[in-house]
Image 1 (cartoon, one colour):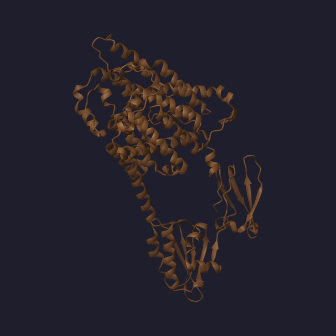
Image 2 (cartoon, rainbow, N blue to C red):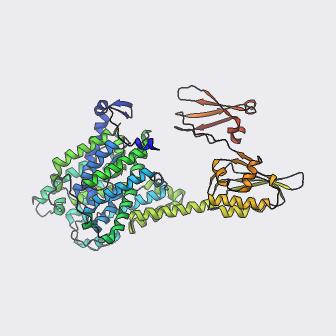
Length: 615
């Protein structure tokens, strides 16, 4: 355990692991794919980070500096060679609400507190449990966030200013709709042209960075309008709301006590917890998607290290909490990055662009920001997945829709939590009604019945009562074989249920006519407290499965080949075929090979990385 955590301490080395194997850092720096990916992602990140900063209820500078510091920390301390860490749409809806409640100066403090929560999750490995989430719930959360981002752009798209802000998102939407009569036709015209154009070009020519080209081309239009060169064409720009944008890299922190009243401390801690949960989810899922695409693994613990350090640095620099971002990670992967140097390079390029050109972005039209974010929200919406659910599983579709609605009407993290609870309850119900028992019988010479009671899958608090009601009463029983070989999970309630059922059997049959087979270590431990089990074990009426260790083999497949003569001996030959074509024979005790192999002369089990001996 300590060795695993020691791996989180960075060790200087001039040799690193890349897509091409071990390489010297000099080779990594010279790799064209890293430069191509780093430069392109940087150009995309600048306008997108400006837009996400605004969507989060803070300044454009905070969005860009989050991309800078998040990317630098991810490139230096994370594990994935492809995952980009920076400002994300998934957090923007939450941050907008927090900024309204406590001002946007609370965002750096959220980053610092969420860093502590991320570190705690990494140390206790709680992050592994956060990924136990149905796809329908996560996609429902994504749909909810997409709706929040998209509908939040009504004001920028229509040129609405000076509207009253409400605590709930949907009330702000209503406020905007009721003031549509005040819209500025110049903003509507720019949005109506740029939004469909951007969406069309990104679909038709996806390899061209249109999210860079169109915003940059719109800057001269905003500058001409601001300086009165277009006559009566008055276009609202970022300067109209934020003044001239200065390249301020670090924003001093304000005392937290001035931002959050003491009575709202618990609400602030819940907000930090929500931020940490979403950040961990987004980062690990983004890294997993990239790892799947390029068939390269990453270390979750080290990725958590990178995320935690990113939150600390962003908090101290006065930025927003960052997270892994899907779109820029996908772009980084597709452009041929081979190492985290591409993310480091991306952050440095964003820094250079930020320091050199930030004042020019002051003239970017607000309608252009709206077009960027609306297109981003449309592309976030998993339409293919929703159509698939409509065809295949309307129950999962309903769960997805409910999660999305709660995200929109209440809070994204509340929607995520409610969706998880509903999913767990649905799973519990399926476990409750699942067939978990097989009872067969045959006549004995004495005239009674010999029963084989086979327990399948899980025996827990969910289905223990049903197990008792079915298994306790066996007609004309004289002998019972309790087969728990297929029992995967047995909690305390399940063990207690077995004890109750066996107690009913022992009122009718002799103790020597009770047998247990297929008992593994889990079941042996759970039942070891009961006297009847101890007696049966001592009398040799309990068949314990051999403790078979996990075998980690970097092989593509493992083939068990045998003939009947060999199966009848005390050994079974395990023939292992590796990528090199060699096939060494491994002998194992016959007792370690159970009935699935005994019933077949040719069994193949495939795994790309690890074979877990589970026969």
